[in-house]
Structure formats: C-alpha cells, structure tokens
Length: 385
Image 1: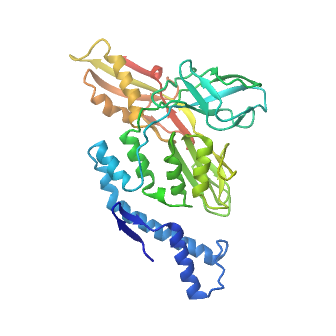
Image 2: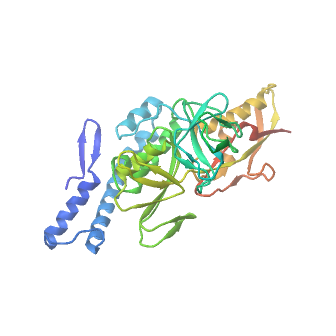
Image 3: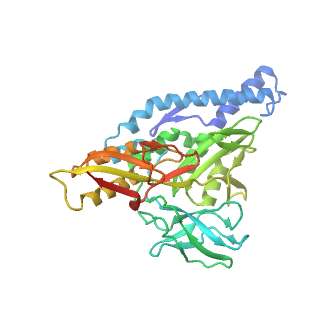
C-alpha cells in the first residue's frame, strides 16, 4: 500500500477509496475470499474504521508538513502559490447574501433564479421556495459580485412577478460580498479542512467541496455515524446522516457537490431542499438564521481627531467583517474589533461592547449553531466621552 506520491506539485495522498480497497483485499487474503465485507457487517465496520484511522494519520502528517506554508505566507501571492499546491484556490469574486421573507398565497411555488431588487442591484433566489412550506425565509444572492448593499429592509422589490407572490423584504441585514476573497477568509477555508477537498465520503471532504463553490461564504458540518437519532450542538440528526448549514451558493450546485462526495445511504438533515441536476437526487441542508447585533464604541477625542473621525471609525468596523468574516455559530465578541480600532489613531478608544438588543451591552454573547451574526452601519454607535 502506497500512502503518498511526490510530483512537481508536491506530496499527494492516496485516494481514500484505494485505501479502503486495499484493506478489503488484506482482510479477504487473511480470512478467505468469501468473506462478507459489506459495511453492515462487523468486518465491514472494521475495514471502515481502519480506513478512517489511516486517512486521519495521513492528513495529520501532511498538516504538519504544510501548515507553515499557508500560515507564514507573507504576501497574497505567496499564499496563493502555497494553497494551489494542495488544491485550494482563492475565489475571484464574493457575492452578497441576504435572507428574505416572501409573503403571498400558501402553496405558491417560487423557483430558484427568481429575481428581486434593492432598487439598484438585483438578487436571485438560490433554491426553490414554497410559501408556507415550512421555512419562513429564503436566501438570495446578489447577481453581481462585490459589496452590494444588503442593509435591512432594502430588498423589497419583485423583479420576476409570480402569481401568488405579493411582497418581499429582508427584515435583517445580510452579509456583504467583496471583489475577491480576502486572505483571512482564504486561510480560514484552508485550515477548515486541510486537504480534505481531495477525498470523498468523509464529512470534511463534503464540507471542503461545498466550501469551494462560487458564492459559498461558509459551511458548518455535523455528523451522526450511529444507528440512533442524536442531537449535536442543539441540532437533531437522524441515524447515519450529516448536517450542513451553508451560507451562500446556488442550490443545485451545492447538491451536485454533495452528490460527488457523499456516500450512498448517508442521510441529510435540514429545512431547505437542494436538487442535483446531475443525478436528480435531492438533499436537505440548512441556511443560517441571521442574527443582527449592535456595536458600541466609547471614545475620547485626541489631537488627531477630525470632524468625520467618528463616521470613519464606524466604516472601518463594518469593513473589517468583509476582511475577516464571522463564521456560522461563532460567538459575537467585542474583542474582534479592538485590533482595527487600535490602528485607527484619530480617536482614543475607551471600550467596545456588543449587544443583541441595543440595550444590554456585554463583552460577548453566544448564538446557536445554525445562526450567523450580521452587522450594518446603523447598528454601530459611537459614544464620545
């Protein structure tokens, strides 16, 4: 069994399916060719376990070798070069995402691709949606990449009229895109899986394959490998199933990526259905619930303070979330804004607090596994001493 090969691109791991096949051959050579190696049998489970253990060891080995290549890259070009050796490529465009409420006649089907507008930019529905069909919100993605406005109560115009669809609105702010994937987000995406994008069947491979899709900003994955229902981090999972909470991305592209990597018989969970065009199979996923939050900066003026310093500070805080995005389920912490404010010399910052209700100010607060914090300019308050 060969674990690694080396070519001009670097160290290449053996495919997981080849490892599993070699273990199957070894067990049959030792115990007889008539051995039942189906995954439902004890021997089949031993083979799967051996495969997982060896694959994990291989990934750990490569992680030790390659971690510094990405983490210590001093320029964007160095990072791109190091990442490309292992199959990761920076996204050339990042799309703004929002959740909208669609009001109308129950049972009305709204197809993916239906267009809405904020008055200047258009957004497309990422998956099919049925009014009153169980989910109260649908996710839309800007047609054009970049920093498209997704402030609350702005996406309220229907571009593609459909009988039974009366009105739309994004009651909460969304996640703004950018012209290119930032280095911070790129590194997070790589570190999220470490070369799992090459594999198949395992949860991390599925996450990495979906994460690499154009338009996908974040993926959170959970797995229940047991024969019994299980609740993990507050999310109920059926037996032998996975759970994917995905922010951004077009539904059928997500389904195609899942179909290419997920094992047959592995179930899926979630309230949103995505359908694969390639094989006509549907999967369940979740879209994150957006949780608006507030930021309060208490400061005093100094000899560098200008008349617009307060407004510019608010812009810097908001822009920092495009460079280093919040992850699904991530704790909302005021500490993430300290570094950008310390670099802004025009004011002297005394404290930074966050809040869920614009009343009770704290250093941090936690959110649910399937939630994502969102911030807009009007939710940033500057308090002068």
